[in-house]
Image (cartoon, rainbow, N blue to C red; front, side, top):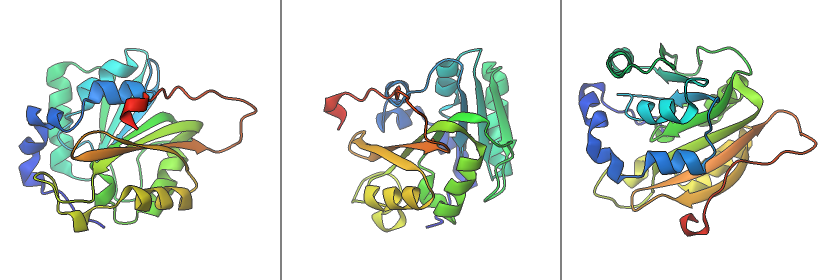
Length: 209
């Protein structure tokens, strides 16, 4: 849909009240982010979730945070330095080109970003490029209904629409979970080759479905 966040309001993205939307530590744990993983934070903005991602992967892991807005990259880079997040690297990205090599990341984190993509299917194909042959994708976005927070319903996608676009891009959709009154989460996988056997680390309690 291409609705873009106003970069002049970056500090709003760093407001602690954002924790009211969902619990990032709980969601990351249940969506399978583990120590040692390489994670891509798409549209990092003010870097609000970087401390949680950094802690989740630990010193043996790596967080790549990207944004197409130079002001956001500057803001997030300053935050990373101030907090001493040594396993986080903030990078300026192009609209449909991620500045990372092929087959690099284990986990992709996209929070309130999917509805801003100019070409969602094409972008998810680019996501596949930088993912390892088996990788996990976590997409969190606003519910397509009336809310007292976030963009209007007509500017976001429904869970069903996101699922269709992910499948068109070649990702395998796992589950959709409700994360609260404002947002939902879509769990998907990148499978570049069918493994003989693998066990997903995702352990989503029945209460979240």
